[in-house]
Every structure is written in structure tokens, then in C-alpha cells.
Length: 243
Image (spheres, rainbow, N blue to C red):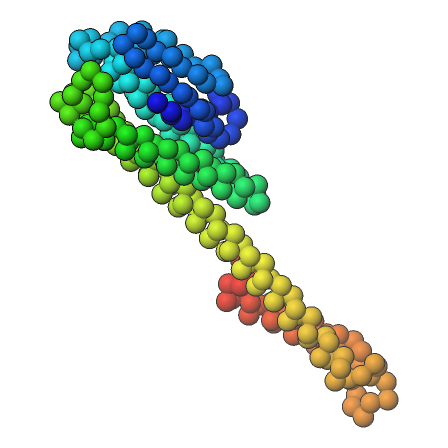
């Protein structure tokens, strides 16, 4: 039996790792090969439920290993939820490229874990339906498999909820970023409009007011420009564009 065992660091960003696990089950015992340390012995020698006590070693070991995988994915789901809460608590000023990197990284981890859990659930479903024979037991009549399948369904629903929460959080971030960008563009438009007032006045009057056929002083021109800019600012403030 070849399985992927979910692994996740105890600290840091909740990035899931997939570890290979090769198992050979027989009536004589269990042979495992994996590139990491995993407490299979502890999982197999823990007190067995009444339903498993009368089953053969291969069947009992299969149930225990599937249950161990289910527990691992529960931990993965909890850590991914912690990652989403960490992103939610991030300050608005810190929500930039770093936020998106962590969000997409978290999204990849959730997608990978959800896909692996789905494959594991399909294995349990085939065992429970009798499509895959299990040595020493009729899996169609074994309650532990149905219980495992129900637990996997719950974890799968948790992953779906986590996906929706992360999607909503990313949409909220994009809306906030878009709102802030609109405010900046609005401010830029106001500054550009205010800059047009002295430019237009200078273009109409020329380089200086001396020698023109009308009696306008430079101070009066400056006062008119300042009043025009002040009135424009007042109009923008009434419209709420300066907020």
C-alpha cells in the first residue's frame, strides 16, 4: 500500500508537506518504509475499539493507518484556519504584496490538502462499498469504515469552508486596495485640476501683465488664481472628494 502522509511544521507558516509512506501488510506483521520518522507503532498498539479487537492484523492495521491519516488532515485543517486568522489580523498597511504571497501560498496548501483528502476518502469509500477487497474482513459490513468515512466527510467540509473563508478574505483585500487606489487617483485628479488654474491664467495673460491694455496688477492676478483654487477646493470638499 502506497500512501501520502500529510505533514505540517509545528511553527511558522502552515505549509503542508506530503510524505511518502509504503506499507506491506500480512498476517505475519507490518513492514513500512518512509523517508521520515512516523509513530506507526504507537498508532497500531494503542487501545483498540471493540469493533477492531476481533479483526486480523492486516485489517486492524489498515483501519488504524487510515484513522491516523484522518487525524493528520484534521491538524492540517486547524493550522490552515490559524493561517487565515493570521491574515485577517494583519494591519491594513501591511496588506500588499506580502499579503498576496502568503494568501496564494495558503491557497495552494489548502488545495493540495483537500485533493489528497479527497483521494483518501475515495479509498475508504471503495473499501466500504466492497470494490476493493480487504484481506480478512468483509469491509461492506464493518462499522469502523463507515465511521472513518463520516469523519473524512466532516474534514472535507472543513476544507471547503476554509477555502470560502480565504476567498472572501482575498476579495475583501482586493476591494480595500481598489478603494485606496480610487482615493489616490481622485486626489491626483484634484491636484492636476488645481494645477491647471495658474497654467491657464498664465497662458491667457502671457509672461507678465505690464504693457497689457487692461489695468490688472500682478497681485490681483495672484489673488484671482488663489480664489479660484480655494473655490475649487470648497466644491471638492462639498462633493466629498477630499475624504
